[in-house]
Amino acid sequence: MSDLELDRNYKKGDKGQKVKLFQEWLCLHGFNVATDGDFGPATEYGVKEFQKKKKQKANGIVGKKTFQNLILPMLNALKPIATNKPLGKLVVAYAEQHLKQTPLEIGGQNRGPWVRLYMNGNEGPDWPWCAGFASFILKQACRTLNAPLPIETSVSCDELAAQAKQKGLFLSEAKAIDRKLIRPGALFLVRKTDTDWVHIGVVLKADVDVFYTIEGNTNDEGSREGYEVCKRFRGYKQKDFIVF
Image (cartoon, rainbow, N blue to C red; front, side):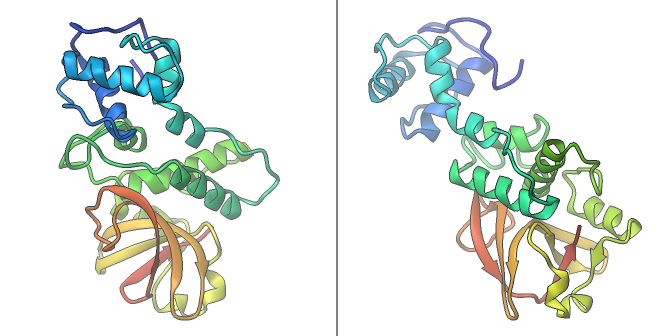
């Protein structure tokens, strides 16, 4: 069942993946409990405190209203944007919409509802999610415009780079010296070798010496194995681009 669906009410004594989802969202809202899938006293207390914050009846039961409030950040991130903007600017708009909801990992490396959203339900150490985030944003924008994807979405930076090269959308670091070619909504790639790219994100704006980004699975230090979606600026060294 989707992380955005509730099949029934849940209360103390219940166990399973759906309970773990509630626990993840409680943690994301600042009510820190164990994400063990066991609806025990601590989880019940966390639900009651969350319900009080939302001015609901604090009964400790996760029903439809409580569930909707728990997942509201994701619902807000998924809202369609009514616009006549071109694809690149719409990619930026959706990236900013997601950023506003502060997507974070929870429960361990590359884990939690945001990671599963971007990674087609996958999570864990083997699933770095920067490419999943960039692909999801691109797909969301194309769906809004009812336009075909310029490249197929992928959770692999290397696969996205290969597709861009095949379709003539790849802009190497050397060619990117003409900054006007890097328009808002382009994707940047951090290059490790000529055939290996290790991180990707959305370009907001390209200046002469730096470009501005929104990227997933990073942090304030710019690590490619971070824990959040955040806004950064980067230099051009070892960077290639996918332009639309």
